[in-house]
Image 1: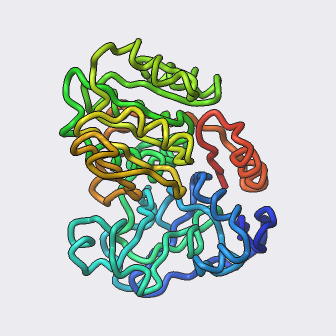
Image 2: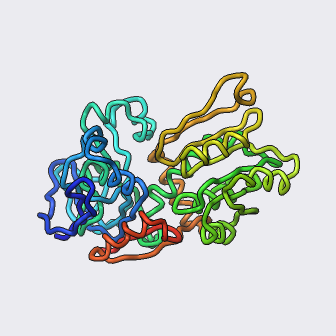
Length: 347
């Protein structure tokens, strides 16, 4: 079968012929109907050889941690799914036995690294292929009649912002403001989720006029350039309304500094983008009871909730489609930042 693999550190991914995987006991083989390209992939492929070695990922590795498809073959003991079932693959997989996993929070499994459990496409072979092997049937969520191409990105680009927003829900009450920094692949979905599940005024910030236009198209009340004038424009737009939460989907030092400047008492700065930055903290540095947190992906139950939002027509993803042969081009466009929404590969 064809698979898009990261083969050599520092080199673009390659389309290669690899064996079709065979499911062992408890495993499920899924025929991929759509796979999403994500900035996390771009981040991994941008690491130096020394940095990459710290992650311990094997090479070659089939990319793709956003995947949907049809159950093709079941291993011994699999009874929760049947051949032909349309399914979405839950990516942040854990041990299944710890306290966090018992709550469906496999994204926070404390034993995953110790046991060598890694997400598909981020340590084990992923969905940028004709078939993908799923370790356990609990990682398959019914997709039903949802369009696989339009909804595959919800397994990350929907689940990740949903999880980030859900934790801040108690603060996003009527009369408050939510700021989204970065209106690209995840950010444009976050705007929709905020509009659907909170009463907050939603403001989008980005450096790209195209992405600011996308933010307005999907429901942002206001959209401004992410620059030194942004804080003033927000104050002018909302008057004395409180910025209750800032969701930073970029997480580089300038965006974090901007987010910090917007915080008030009990506000959240939520760093969703992949990165490491610096901030002064403490009673004399930040407003009282303000928080900075860095969520990761989301729980299995939250994925079900996100798909239900899509099923109700309340959230959608802007996508550009590519064939598996065109997948290297999808990643080139992703790296350059020229995609309007998410790149979806259709084998």
